[in-house]
Image 1 (spheres, rainbow, N blue to C red):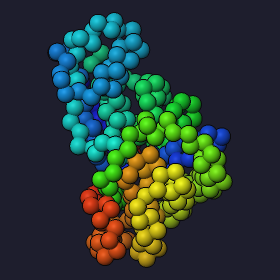
Image 2: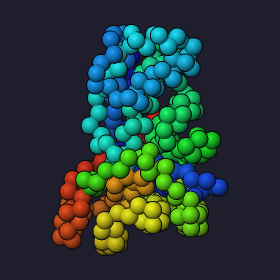
Image 3: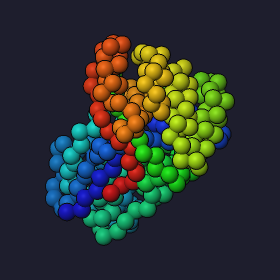
Image 4: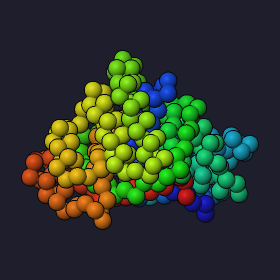
Length: 286
């Protein structure tokens, strides 16, 4: 049995028009899709893109496509679907690496990225480092060298959004209108990575989240910003093509129970009825 796993994402730390095109930096968290590839008959429960990725890897390795008929994909994932949490990227990236391992080889990050974007817009969770990534072409991959020590209170809305449908919308004007804001956010993010400064990072992610309101508004966003200011946490981030929101903090410095109390007191939990205590982790397929 060959196995692999890939983390989910709490939306994006940044997403928008950056360095001449739309790019993103995902927010990998400790929530995984686990995939195994074994010899056997294909099952009925695998997700369609997993089978497509298996075929793509066979082609890349020079293995006849007919071999797919003798390969079984099994997976275990509780990552919420269609919420902007990179569930599909986790599935297909883990499938790609598990398939390669079944044939005794390994796919590097650049090849994984290339294979994934051929199937769908892809999150940068497949990179170990926080990476500015052209999620549609994989032509930009700018990695940072700092992993911020962040706890995340992920707020899950019941709203769902098909990422592929979102990317088919004509969003060019809104992206261009927010280009100056995203340039500022990218500059702050780069400074934060250089200075290893969580406060600067939170400023950057909050700027990007605010710009996203013109494209995909999040309920009670103004109240969420108020909670950031009231509690003194680092900032917030959002799923720019989904519905989740993350509150970024340090459990050793900030009171997570008070955060939850503030959310309840201000009625925010009505829009985000499920909350998950998570942590920012290194990305990459394990």
